Length: 154
Image (tube, rainbow, N blue to C red; front, side):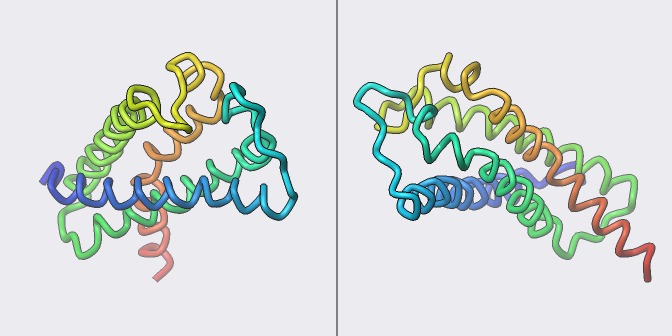
């Protein structure tokens, strides 16, 4: 099997919600602990003190959570090594494009207090957004590497 789209999409939604809660929670917690002042009116969330201080941890969250959900996606999968590699590629590409589209809709097109312009999201949010997309793309490969190493050690 190349990819179980229903399963891949279901776990994508759950993982996306989890990281969408954890990343802001890190920033909010930092702001509360450090008594950070709220950003001035009209200032982008990208320039707020708590966001600037915690955005590297957002990337770390991606590198921890997405491989975990890749592992859940592949749980009890019994395909050959060749098919598994193809499925890992499929999941990596599917999750990357699903994230890019979801981010565009949720953070650029839909207007809310945390929405950004396309320029802010795709240019000013560099290198962080690229690192986040890299983490999501690599997550099935991280899971695959961990499983391969574990199998070789036994």
